[in-house]
Image (tube, rainbow, N blue to C red; front, side, top):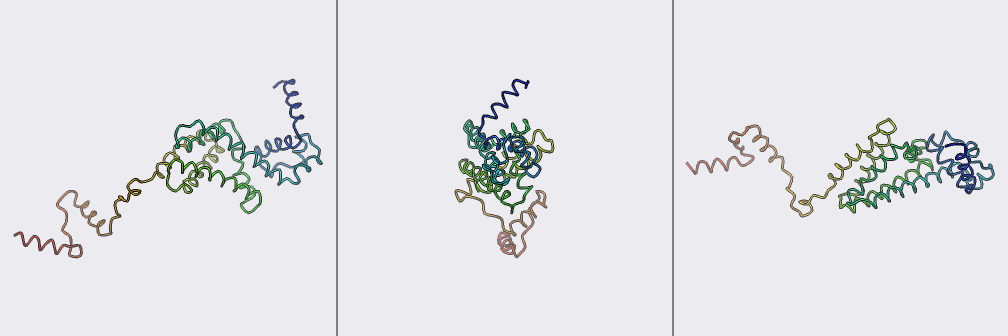
Length: 249
């Protein structure tokens, strides 16, 4: 960006409402460095706003952080929902989140980890930590709805497991794994298969579980390595088999 372009960008930013300038400034700083490391004075200075203007729109730093998280949630939601609209199957709709994450990771979008950062910085008992968890819960709710649409078993449990994969991909990306989202997507495919309904169970045709006696008998058959199966003892009906043998002699 040359001097003229930079000047035009600054002019365009100056024409924005003060609240939007403050929020955009905080968005970039919070995403890059975390919440605790960024002070209000720095935000005021970078946004070109007066302190009185700042407090008129955001009575506290906490209020600004809440607005920042709301903004990121909406950005995230809109991008993923648009991607879902271009998928062909319910499975693809679920997995598209990893395609979006892969794009964000490749572009170094720091805001991807916003909710995890805030939760880690402040903990689950702080108002900001609770707000982050509410956003995460909303994301799981959407995942559960997609799982229901795909006909998967236990949509809520699926959403929790899927969320573990997305969070793990975020951490791996921070560590430098440039393929974290794609690796997680492959694991998510296996997770989808794990939550497929079992047709036999749904129709009541699932094979009943083996008893301890059944398992012991099968173990003895395995030990015989294809030889004649060992005779059962009296406790498992061996006496009746001997009587049948005697009668046939």
